[in-house]
Image 1 (tube, rainbow, N blue to C red):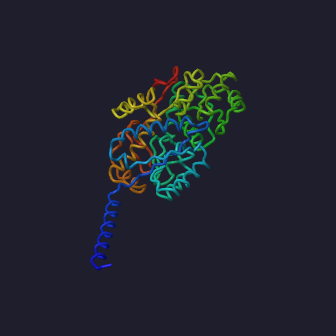
Image 2 (tube, one colour):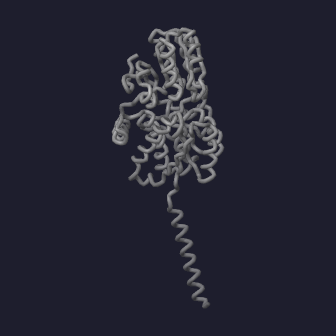
Image 3 (spheres, rainbow, N blue to C red):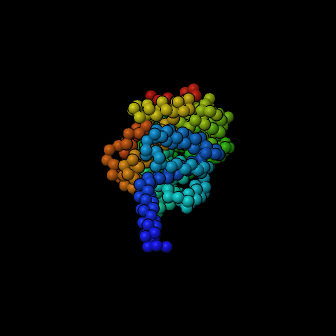
Length: 370
């Protein structure tokens, strides 16, 4: 082979290498977002509404260049702590994960140390347990904390003149935390919890606990359960003839209750992050109605906001978990979300929202002037 030919081949190989390097340098980094939610099982209604919100966010950026850099991975957690940890390890082993969005407080708490270690942003759209305030530097949320919700519920119960209160609460991090926050706030308003019954996740026979509630003879009963337990609880409350006024947490915004037990939930007063009256929510509401032929769901709006928070960080140049966290930490102004302004304190807690009271009427709920 002549020297000239060798030189030409060497130049060609070098040109191909340089072209490949340039191509790699110009290729946008994909930001992988893991949405781990219960898409099957008793809590599937939560996964459904979270996916609705995430999908609307993706449709908002479908024609935006930043949309090509976002990759959403959906996995079914079944609301199982064991399963969500398995999902975490499986997905982290396959690809770089920048953000994880679980649903519940309990799931978020079990993932928090793993996310902090791997520098993955943990951004649950719905979880509001106070325990997340100390869960670590990579934990942020979209919903205000349980202490705010418990305080709003306690004020509503007290304002109605109720002094003797029973509580049914889910025996997990969310249920226990919210029950404690409510009980503390109720005491400061002059009320007293006369019965507090812990209910296991997916428990459908609550008659023993409800019999204890009936014996305590409260003038009001607060239900802090997921739909899987709330629906049988409502049926058995009627069956046992319990006459106490009914109150609830944000669980009463879940569509499953209205699909399966709306007649039993009539008049229930509950606390929920207030629906905003801003242009972003109105835009979201229109998109939701087109997609689902229904009024906008505030929980879907929270999932949409979680996605758009990440989109904004990526738009500003973030390419991984640490960069997204750095953007969140440096952001001084509030994010204009469909759920209202989102501003965090040093713990990743939302300090720019409030809870409001709603009442179940017909097949839906509406603001309550309680």
